[in-house]
Length: 486
Image (tube, rainbow, N blue to C red; front, side, top):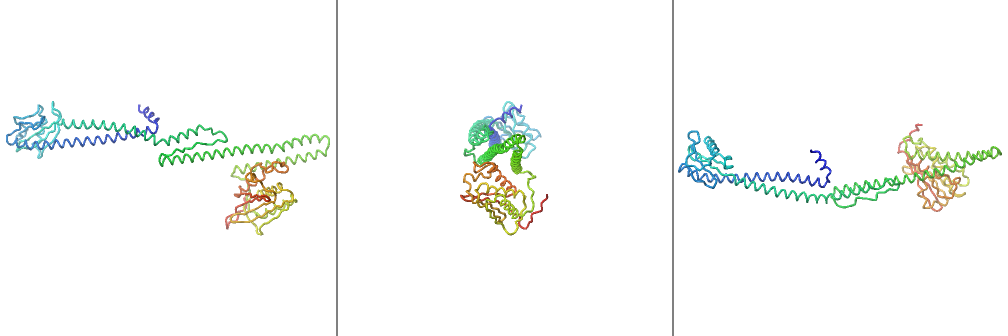
């Protein structure tokens, strides 16, 4: 029986529930206030009646002392009786103006015979109603009992209760109705936030470019609602940024898969074509067979390098616990010298100028990987500049970092391409062949390997100069890089 109303109450809106709760609280307050007011009024009227009876008995006591009894009612409906209590029992003196039911008056007179002060009480007289009784001594062995009707007090109290019930009921209805309106207005900002949440829930977030255009921007509601609105909008901004990052990651993944497929397709087609030619050449011309076999090996080696780069990038992106690095105490200056010597041997048409410190620069790094970074930067300078272009390599130490700058005096990189040179499979010159322009992974691999060493690569390019700067952090002062564990 209780569960059903409770479920119905829980389904009500918050404003209605708060209004009902306010009504219940007000009802309790009104009940307590009405009870206190009624009790006070009853006590006040009874005290007034008692004072009136005391004054009347003062007059009646003189009359009873002079004549032995009181035969006249002081007020309509009042009764007066004089009792003789000398024999230990209360004997009513005649004549007397008493009701038919004299038992309560006699009992009070009997009690007064053994008491030293006036006695006051309330009793119900059969056929008469409720009366207020007061007994006092008139003389030795004589007790005067006065009975005053309580009808006036009861009627006044009943009228007061009726007025209170009507007034409190009207006030309660007005309070609930007006409170409901005020609460609805006060909770409207919360309803706006809920509407915004419903709008977001109906928004399709499965699209790769999904965004959240809705925000809870309705003003008002007070500091608490404003705090909730700010937190809600901050959460939406975070979700929106996450969706944007996800969309960008999906776009880059699709582009990466498409570029990787395209890059792998070319050597695979070449391998297939040379395999067909090899089969034909093997039956007719042995010298052609050797040439095609060499091309097969070249394409297979090129595809192997591409796959190795892709695997390295995937492992670096995954941020695996077992990172593909073998860190050891290494002299960066020696690595730069080795990379410069290899470049001079492989690209004699590009004069190279080397500037390095005289003292070793000891760092904890993976020497083959950093050498790969330097080789990629130098190869990039040779591939994208005409023969005779000067290349400059400089190593230096600044506060907290070691720097390696690779600079060429070629045509530079257009401004629109500078932000994307480190993207995978991106080529500044779209007209270059893959034999001449590479796979577009060199700079991406260099950037990823540098980040894996907690460093970074920056680009500065103008017309006639392009400079890549590799920054690697130095070990803390006073600490020697520990030896390699492997």
